[in-house]
Image (tube, rainbow, N blue to C red; front, side):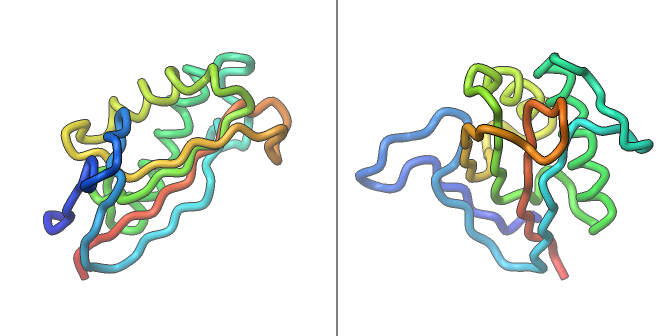
Length: 132
């Protein structure tokens, strides 16, 4: 969506690393459920490898966004769930390969004790706005 406004650091708020604190816009909301590192057969991709899993997760997100007529440029918010914050550099690398790093979406990263699928190290959900 071209009408998105990204604010890296509102007055009085320290800039984040690789995300915008605020993203605003108008359009149709697209909500993508948390994606995990499973292929189209439901099999785990990259067992024990956070970088391989992150790449698969963002591939899955891209496919889900496309189904709704959206792309990564339309994403206004990502939520990252990781079993270990040490995986965040790998997740950021996969994320930065698909987003416009000059206008990154808002983002939240959370370390969790478990994910729903065995062997998954991370899960990412997305919110996007697209033109009607």
